[in-house]
Every structure is written in structure tokens, then in C-alpha cells.
Image (cartoon, rainbow, N blue to C red):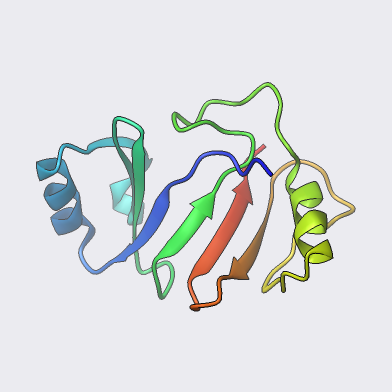
Length: 123
């Protein structure tokens, strides 16, 4: 099962302080809009998302169709197919992608320890 790019999405209290902290660890702003309280940062192949006031907890995120540089992959498994496979394995969906749609969609699941996992396809 290919899940695509893997950033960790962090719920931060002060996006400016968090940006500065991660810059000190060698991360650089990659995409996003700090004035809208979100920023994606990169250090080589490590990707983190900083999000202020957008969700309660940190989230593991997978982006089918993208590589770690947010570039489109020629071939990838559509999110609706991933969702069907997970359902067949008994994974409970917290939110679901509309299986009759095409293009961008997302679903959310939770691991056994309560960690949120967002699978978010942008194309």
C-alpha cells in the first residue's frame, strides 16, 4: 500500500515561535502562509506542517499522489482505493472520502493509541 508523502502535522501554540525553533533545527519554509497560521517546513526529506488553531492534536499525514517535495507522482493509488482496502481489513473510518467522487479527497482514521491519521489527496 503506497500512501505517498509523509509529513507530521503539528498543532502549535505560536506559529512564529515554532517556525523559529524548527529553523534552528535546519528546517526551511517550503509552502504555506504564516498569516493564515499554517506553514510546511522541510529539512532534506523530513517534512513537518505547523498549524496554529486548526486542530486539537498532532496528526500523522499521508498525501497519495505526491512525493516529499509536493510534486505529482506519475502513478499512485487513489485515496478511494486505499479507503476500500483499509475498510476490508476492518479499519474503522472516522471520516470518509466520497467513493463516487474523483480528484481531491481525504479520510481520517485513528491508530490503537488514539493518534489521528489523515490521508489527504490533493489531486
